[in-house]
Image 1 (tube, rainbow, N blue to C red):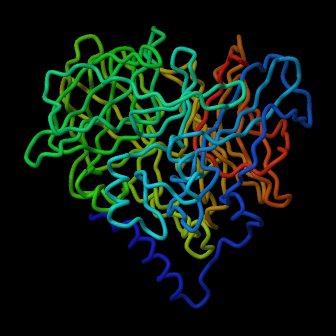
Image 2: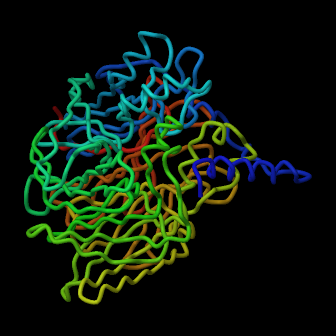
Image 3: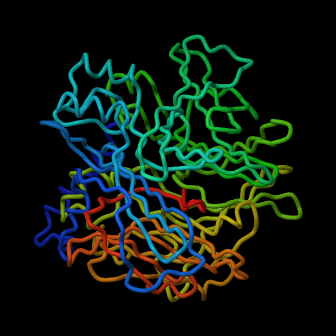
Length: 520
C-alpha cells in the first residue's frame, strides 16, 4: 500500500460516517480536545500536594516525554507525534514531599523554529500545513529528524530523550534542562558505508541481562539503487559508547519501534512496513517514505548475544509497535509477548484532524490483539497465540502502551499493565488502564473513570516487595470535568485509585516515560 493509504483510510471512515443518517460521535468528552492543545508554560521543581500521604518507600523521579506545542507561526504539524518535545517530571525525595517540572527540550528544531517564528525544515513524521516548499523539503531531508519526543532512558546514569533515531538529547533530570545533543559514533563495520545513512534506531532500548549495559538497533539505508541495506544490533555501554553485537545485510528496511531481549538473545520482528529514503525525500516525512505490504510475511531475527549469529524465522503478516517482555523456556524455546496489529494504520490515531473530529474518532483504524509468540530455533517454527481476556476486564486483550515490573525483565512473569483506547466502542476519549494476568485470566482487571483521560501507566516496584505486583502504578491524566491535569496513582493489585495530585498547568497527552530510582 502506498504512502497516502493511511490518509485515505481516515477519509473513507469519515465519509462513511457522514453518509449515515445520525452518525455516532465521541461527544461525551468535556475538554478532551484541550488534552492535545499546545501549552508553553514551564515550571521547575514546583511543590505539589497529593490527596493522601505518599508511600514511605517511594523515592525517585518519574519523567515522561510528549508533545508540548503543535504549531509555530502560521504552520501546524499534521500529526501529534511531531509536536515539539516537552518533558514532565515528578520528583519524590522520599520524605513525603513531591515536586513537578515541565520544560521543552532545547533541540535544534525547536530553538530554530522559535527563532524564526515558523516550523524549521527538519524531517517530520507526517508533515506540516501549509506544506514545505521544494527547497525546504530537500533541506529537511538533509537535516533529518531532530525532535526527540517519544521516550526517556538512562545510559550509565545519564538521562536522555529519544525518538526512533540514532541521536539523543541529554537531559538534567533535576530540573529538565537540556544539556546537549549526543550523536554517538557508529561501530566499525565489515560492510561499505559508501552512499549509506546510519540514521534510524528505536525509542525503546532494552537492558542487557546481568550487565549494566543496554541493547539498541541501527538501520543503515542505501542511497544507491540495487544495493543492500543493513541491520545491526548495538550494545550501549555509556552515553557515547557503542559496540557491535551483530550486523547483516537485508534487501529492504522495515520500520521497528521496539524489540525484545532474553538472557541469550536479542529478538527483532521485521514487519513488511518498508522504509524508502527516496520517497522520504520526495514527501519530506517519515510516513511518506514508508509503504505497507499486506501480502508479505513478517520476519523474526533472533541474534545470539555471545556469537552474533542470526537466526531467521518467517511468520504470517503482522505489525508490532511495542514489544513487552521475552524469556527462554527450559527446552530452549523463546517466548515473547506483544500487542499485535493487523497493519500500521494506528499511527493515524494521532493525526490532529482525526483527534479533533468527534465523528471520525468513534472508530479505531486498527485494534491490537495481545499475542504470545513461541519461537523454536531448531525447527524454525513460530507459534502464535492470541491471549483471551478475563471476565472482569473484557477489553484487556486490546491493550497498548504496555509496561510491567521491570524487575521481571528477561524472565517468566504474570502481569502486564497498559492503556486501552476506546475500550467501550464509544470513542477515543473513553480510555481504560488495564492489568493482564498472564497466569490466571480471572485476575484481569481494569480502571476507568468518567471524563478522565489516561496516558500510558508506569509500574514502580516496592523495594523488597514479595509479590510481582507490589508497588504503585502511576499515570499522567487529564480531568475533563475540571479541565486540569493530575498524576494518578493506582494500587496494581486491585487497579483502584489510591492517590492523585493536580498540577499547576495543563499537561498535553504524552507518549512514554520511566521512573528512575535516583532522586537527582
